[in-house]
Image (cartoon, rainbow, N blue to C red; front, side, top):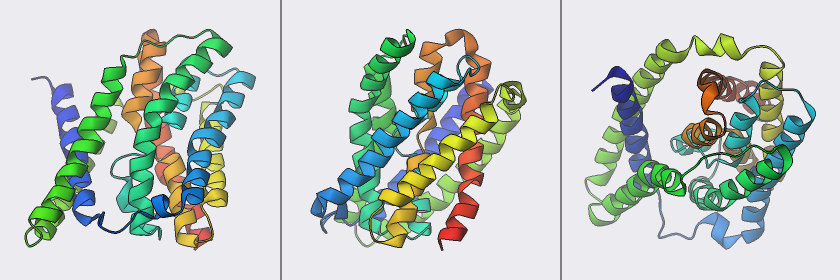
Length: 279
């Protein structure tokens, strides 16, 4: 087994463990806020899957970006929420049922939006992407659906031990994600400087800033939920963006990986001053 495969497995296991903990902490016996208030759910999905993708499409249409960069940004704009994001959503003040609702709703809706974005980019730019639908569904199944269901099942059928198992999964998953992220930067961090130039950094910052703004505006009356939606709008699943962009530009692997890493780093750093200001 080569080091690249080991790194992917470490990151995958870290994500799975964090989502198991999310499932343990979910209280699905109480109605989810987004199911009880459909208008709030509609506003959230408008921010994530209408406003942000339309904005990114306009930028890619107008700006002469490096080949592959636009595909990565478009891929992020229609990807579901990053699985471990729920912990961040709660940390910025989002209600637990709102955070879990965003996680589940965005995962389901992305299955519909991704094929639509593929069709739109082909019509507008003549760029086709080779994406097996089962590949995306498998990613979401392994990283979201199965571990979330496992955590919910543990909480329901083993309520006495589930909190301890969830806490253990959270600690171990966080450790694996940290180790995996450091190894990922060591292995591929040199690709980030290669994508700097031709407005890549600026457009990435602009996309994330717009996502924070529109998420904060459409998050509803609760300040914590507004911060949670702003965070969810920009914290998207990198594997889906990587699948879409590499399928469209297989010859630009270094650019695609560098842009994915640049987006992830920027989406971690840029929201910090925004969240402090909103508090």
